[in-house]
Length: 355
Image 1 (spheres, rainbow, N blue to C red):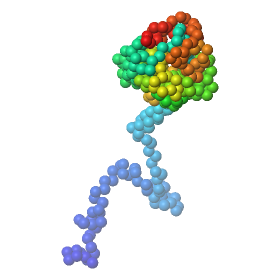
Image 2: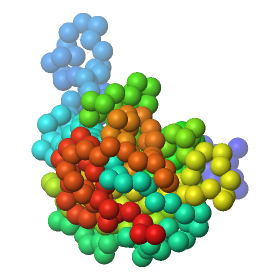
Image 3: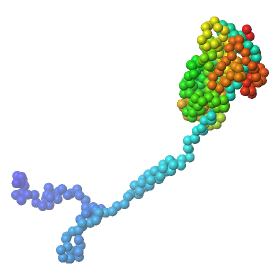
Image 4: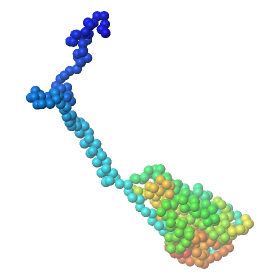
């Protein structure tokens, strides 16, 4: 029913507010007509019998815009480049060199006369060339470290520190020296050297590859014991770059131990035993990261020892008052620079305490 002001028939068609009011905002331009899904047939087409008045147009097939096509092409090129670089990129990680087996030489030094001894170990040291040596790890002094062309200061320090750790564990640890312990030394080695290390202790052989005394210092606990835990040490460490992926550290140290017969009391005379060790360590970048090392050369002179004694597995020192038949170059001094060349040398008198 109409309102008070409306005609009974409603608002006349075409009058304001009529049915066309809602279509006033629609603009029937050419693009709107072209987009229409329904299309009226022409008069000629409508002459045919039963022809409908309109037909449905097929949807327009619009191709990708130029910008979208370029974007797809760029994505495809980037994806293809990523695959190519992943398969054949020019910056391949260098392959680490496999560790070389440790080459070792152990030379016993026989005394030329009876081994001097004294109950007072301080007196022994005071009358020997080890008088001014430092005690324990303090004797393994760190050099001033500098970066190399391909290794930073911290990497050089890591190499030197790891080498020092190896020296401490392999020549100063009482459990290693007399108890037969090896784990503290083993864990510092590159994993690829562990087979050689294990074989050396399971099946010792004097072949220059599998002598336990080439890896560490250890005495026969049935024969000797430490008379003084304050082991005297002196030597040098030096680091150098051998190539862009390798650092090497050379160590040359003399260790002096005060020993007495196993199970004896403190009044028993002690004697000094000297071990000169020249070791060469190698580090690749994985070794530096894991704080491990490859030991590539071990050259050891030790005495007083009898030339007839097998020094492959354990060291069996000659103690105070004992003598041994000297052999090889006369007067080999483990305190002096230079290396003996014989399988057994004679311990120089200057290397013994003068009591």
